[in-house]
Length: 193
Image 1 (tube, helix red, strand yellow):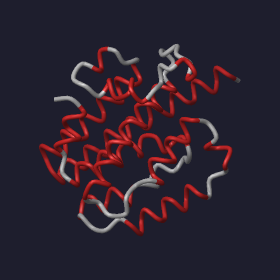
Image 2 (cartoon, helix red, strand yellow):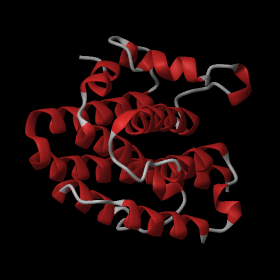
Image 3 (spheres, one colour):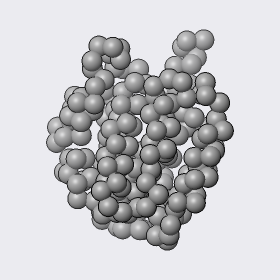
Image 4 (cartoon, helix red, strand yellow):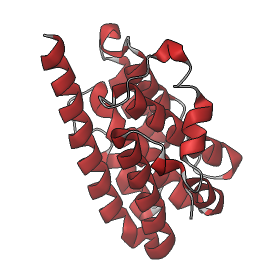
């Protein structure tokens, strides 16, 4: 089943976990705190209101120096969390999960060392990231994007198959993706320095 199909069929908890997992993997471009989003995950476990914890996350992001979010990848990571709906239901939640999926794929494409495309070449349009989410999209994607696509699919499958019990594994999948992304960013910084 394609990522698009999984998002279309996901329930509210699955959608929230999908968007949060994408955000969790990418927030390391902004802050070094691996625990920043932990309270939001806890709200998914007990199905409680996350609006207060979401405001605290946003406040923490507001405290980050503007230079930290100046490039496009960091801007995408910031936008994922700033646009999270306070209420985890309805069309807004589905739109957020879908937007986080696309933003995370784009962010990974921007940082993929195997993707020679420059942002100005048009290869990084939302259309190319949308195509990756289709049935055969992973075959055309650069390695970092294909790995992110796989993580997004796994998170949605875990929630669809195991409900709340799948959340722990979803957190693990996100942590693994966060470590990979940090390593890529670190390598890029060493290459430029």
